[in-house]
Length: 218
Ligand SMILES: [Zn+2]
View (tube, rainbow, N blue to C red):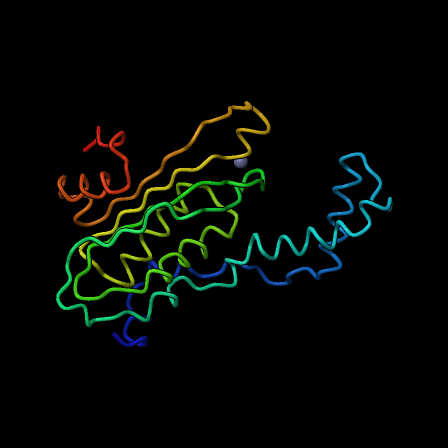
């Protein structure tokens, strides 16, 4: 598939992957000043020795936490392979470490993702699938939207017979504040194509990822 044709077609993936960065991104110095303000708001002195370099460190950490805004998940999937010897069985990536940040509290969402697709002639390098997950995870997120974005992008760009995404994650906004619910994992899933329509395909995927406990809805 050439990039031009596919760039023109999948409107949904394009808009989902477009970086929402507004105009006038603040400078690094402004970002560091904001961290100093938050330290003072917390009740500490940003000029004491242990905190002096903290604003710079926090801003560098933010560059890592939110690196996904600079990635284009659609572009990551454009290089696919058609020489598959007719391989048309399920491709599953399971237990992919997931690190994101909740958009309501800006604290970590930590968990794992499982992604599967049923190829229709084209496959993509597995590292690319992992990077698509990361490109969406390293943004401010809610788990439901993250799950849907990953599935929709793979479906729109690769156009397989189906896509399944399951994410299990703990939200630190639930475990370290508010209701302080420890050991609670949120599970979200998005099933498209054959994974939605064919119970046996969905069952096969869920059994591969060890998710028998979610088969009740099947
Ligand atoms: Zn939250």
